[in-house]
Image 1 (spheres, rainbow, N blue to C red):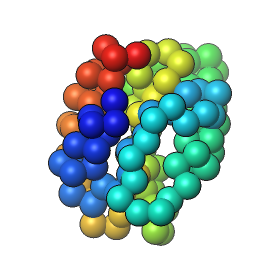
Image 2 (image 1 turned 135 degrees about the vertical axis):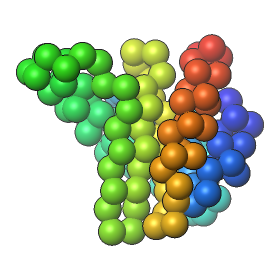
Image 3 (image 1 turned 90 degrees about the vertical axis):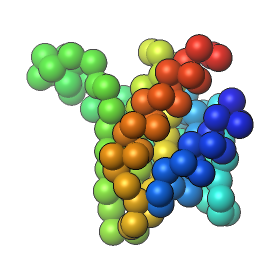
Image 4 (image 1 turned 30 degrees about the vertical axis):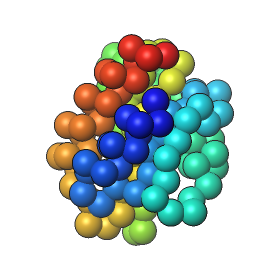
Amino acid sequence: MLAELTQLVSDVDGAWAAAIGGLDGLLIEGHSAGSADLGLLVAEHAGLLRAATTSYAHTLGGGQTRELYLRGERLSVYLHPIKTEYYLLLALDGRSNLGQARLYGRDAARKLGAML
């Protein structure tokens, strides 16, 4: 799994970290090109993904969440669910390519799902 995450960071312009997180907020595996606290990133984003999933699936009737993208001033994160209890997190900088993140992220999530 680490090799897949490392390749994902390498393939996506502007990506600096990738991780597999559990919806319980625990880091399963991760790779960072810097000194980021991947455990903290996974924990915080697990709550956001759970809230989005609850809102879309139950409150709004929009079905399951397929992906979530959050953009801040200095940090952007692309999330893609893997099975029902895990998700892929891809951390991006300001020069990131969202199209690449989505394309390569979906492919990586599929491959990682087969490993989990």
